[in-house]
Length: 157
Image (cartoon, rainbow, N blue to C red; front, side, top):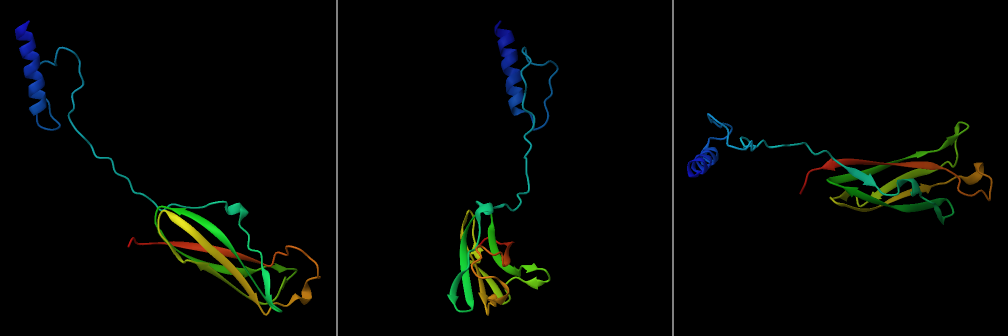
């Protein structure tokens, strides 16, 4: 019995000192016990991830600043795993071949830079020199433009 125990202990010791990736035995230990022979690293490439919370609820409502100027903003909550730079563009809505409300349109995003894990942006739109002569008075929620928000990753600081 002692000889068998000594033989098993000797085999286990031999397995422990065996070079990585190689085990040599004439006979396997008494019980079929799995033996470690290699550790293999697992790696992956991590892409850029961004999410705009409640995107379907975002809307910019323009309010009158002066006789021919209107502006408005909305807050946009961003979650991300990287540092990002935001920008925007604005496109007038055209109906029946003409701009719904002619004027000079502009937009802005503040802050332009957001770091992981994210933050809140203010996205604003503005119309100056607005010509309301083509739209009947008293209309509510007239769709006059679309703001497109763009994003590009930037390197970590």
